[in-house]
Image 1: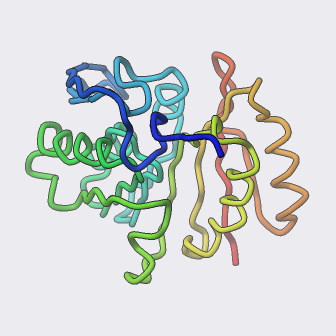
Image 2: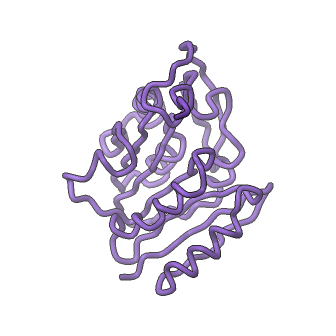
Length: 211
């Protein structure tokens, strides 16, 4: 079995620790992020995440939102800033990522940080006992793990959404965006999926849970 301990989706990445600071303007606001080796795209915010953030739908009403597989917290922190009336959860299996996410919440949200919580664990494990359901789940999925794992996750998402909640995610076209679009329509014929944008080789999706 291949050892994945050096991958960003492992719990304890086995790479030397180097801390970085990066800045980025997202949705017309400047953010500063502390990052660390062993975390996805630690030296800059990846293009897929930037495209996703600029086009993702953020509810205007108070909501319960989740950044799933949050890395160092970029998506969740933008949600917390843009929707201060909402409760935002950030989850990642990578312990280094969660350390960064907690630091970045302090740096970027200040008076809003009480509504934004970072939790360590694999996908929905940290909230299973909380019986939480979300108005919105947001994700830049780690497809380097393989498409099969993401398709399995897709089948689990509706259980964690409120009625009329949505799952939003970004996929690189060459990583199978059109396949995933077709898979969702065939697997969930009663649910709605829309493409929010196609830009720079990335597709941003929004899937609605109506039941």
